Length: 445
Image (tube, rainbow, N blue to C red; front, side):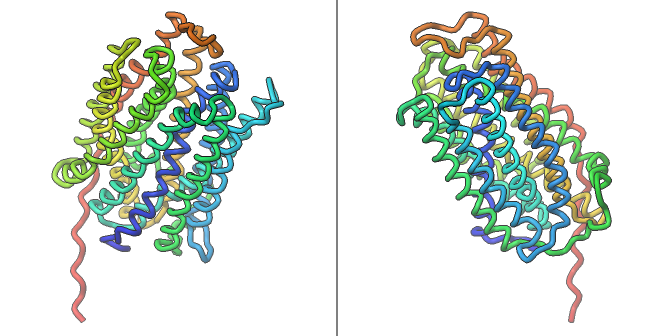
């Protein structure tokens, strides 16, 4: 396999992350707010619908991982799934934001759930083979860190794109009309950016299939036996639930607690994204000099400390403080994403070196299963909190939410996320990779 990869290939693969993070951020940032305040769905029901769709998706992910590993065709193992996932994800986003006006009650809930399932299926079709690619693109651990730095940069761009959408929806007429146009914009963006990774997969396709002797769910037992991978997975569970809780709460925090303008999410995400991108070269250099495991833990604790400061926020919070939190959090987000995503293919490759079997799709499917389940748990928790603390979805303009609703929003945005991130450091203490043996010198001719 290749060592050093061309920049065009790394950037084409990384651009797909604009699509994946758009799908994830739509689910975690926009949908709970859209479903409750625009469509008028009860918060607990909205969170339950999001969770149900992700549960279906989570079960499908490991199955698709195994199918991808064993797929044979002229496009290779990954490309057909990447293309199908891109088209399906884009269609689902258009559908969820454009329900027929005549639908209400159970009919509206069925449309929403069906659209969510389409999005979830598309995301899995794309993301499972997408995550499998870095481990088979190169054997070099440092080169994988470079690959992931491109991904993290594009993740920030995707987050910024979705962060601009609340203000865009208001500018386009607000309500169903504004969000309907937002759905079309995001759907097209998802198809185009995910399509870039489809092109990259055609250049890196792997036609061999050394894992064909293992069939069914027996293939997935190896995941439990890979201790480094499992330690990362346990840490990711805490982190994904925490960040999903924050993103599901942040629009409610800005609107109902801080009384911030519609532009606040865009400025907040812009600050965070800029900090993540600008500090990425620093994190790459740190990853080459110091333990990625230690840097990962430090980034977790730094992010938790910044998020905890939302407890100090109050109505009329200056925009400078909102943006400052975004910038500070973005610095640590860069380390979280780069180190976490770099360690995953390292742990996957360790299994390949020990067993001689290539099963990147199995590991990607297992990770995707956890990612979906944990990410869906955040909105479910926040939706339940809003319901329990008597959040009023259709409050008349000019009226404030009751005090207990404000308490629920603060808990979902500023208490639960930092607590979970602090807990995620514990499994990282037990993460350990075996040294890679030096490459044998080429035989003289």
